[in-house]
Picture 1 (cartoon, rainbow, N blue to C red):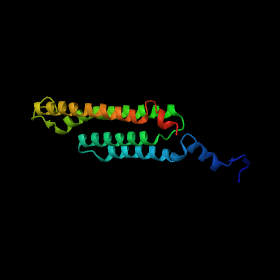
Picture 2 (picture 1 turned 180 degrees about the horizontal axis):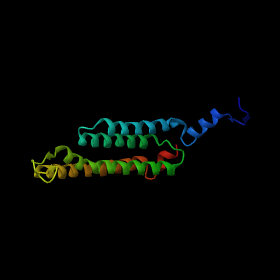
Picture 3 (picture 1 turned 60 degrees about the vertical axis):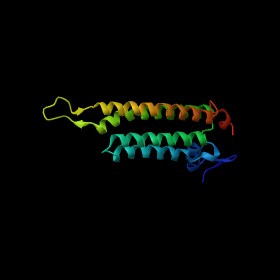
Picture 4 (picture 1 turned 90 degrees about the vertical axis):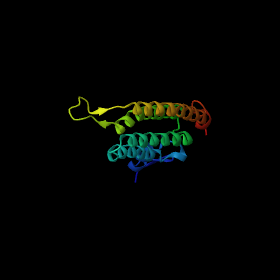
Length: 163
């Protein structure tokens, strides 16, 4: 086995555990596994949900929203600025995923052009109305979600990051 210096063992196994656990709080030492599961879920969604672009976009947005809510409830990192940074990154990812929803809805509902037509898709008035309706519903919900997540975090992760 490795030599002992104080309480920290210097063998390879202990060093690996130290590198994996050090950035996280004691109650969230497994957070790296959560991040890997998030990546796996997003990759599986992009890989296996191929027939319906709107469903793929909606599942991606829901996965990111769940990850943001989980992050804001746990605040896994020891450093407050890292928790804030992760919250901003997940919020940005959620905004991008929600902005992809209208385009995915159009791509899913698009109809093939008639034979000899110049374009591959025909966009109708009802498609435009559906996109506008989606934006008008999603934008306020996104605003409330982001405001609640930052309020829950205590602004700059102030209240919960000092546990």
